[in-house]
Image 1 (cartoon, rainbow, N blue to C red):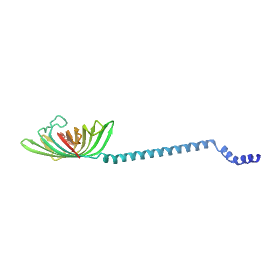
Image 2 (tube, helix red, strand yellow):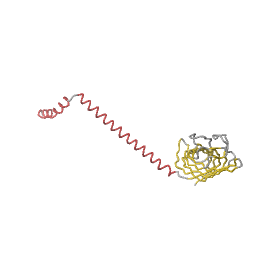
Image 3 (cartoon, rainbow, N blue to C red):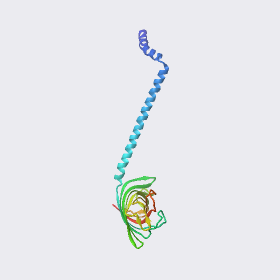
Length: 231
C-alpha cells in the first residue's frame, strides 16, 4: 500500500509541480482570454442566427403576402375640375373629366384589428374645358402605389385611401392654369365603401404638381366619383 501511495505521489508530482510553478498572473490571463473568446463566439453566432432569421422572415413575407391576397380592380371615373378651394390657385371648375384605372393588390396586412392594403395603380384621365370660346383637352397618365385602410380586420364597408406617384399631362396650358412641366407628381385622397359582393364606390380628390421644382406651379386639381369592379 505504501508503494502505491508513493507511486501515486510520484506520478502526480510533475503535473502538480508544473501547475504550482506556473505564474498565477499568466494563468489568470489565459482564463480571461479564453472566456472573452468564448463570449465573442457566442455573440457572433447569436447575431448571425438572428440576422438569418430576420432575412428569412422578411423574404417569406414578400413571397407570401402577394400570393395570399391577390385581386384586381377596374375603376371607371367621372368628375369635374376644381376651383381654388384646396391646393391649386387657378380655377378649372367648368372642366369635365372621365377616366379609367386598373389596380392590383400587392399586399394585405392587419395591425391592431385594422386592415391595410397596398395596391399598384395605373390611370388614364381625359378632361375638356371651354376657355375663351376655345375647346381645350387634357390627357393625364398616372402610375402610383396606393395605401388603403379599413377600420376593421376585413375588406368590407367604409375605407380611406391615399396614393402618391408620377404623372404625365399632355398640355401645359389648360383653362386658366399654366404648368411649367408636363411631368408632375400625382397625389390623391379618397373615401369609399366596399359592398359584400366586392364592388366599391369611392369619392376621390386628385392633385398634380411639380412640388415646386419649377415655376410657375399653380397645381392641377379635379374630383371624381368612381365605381370599382372587383375581379
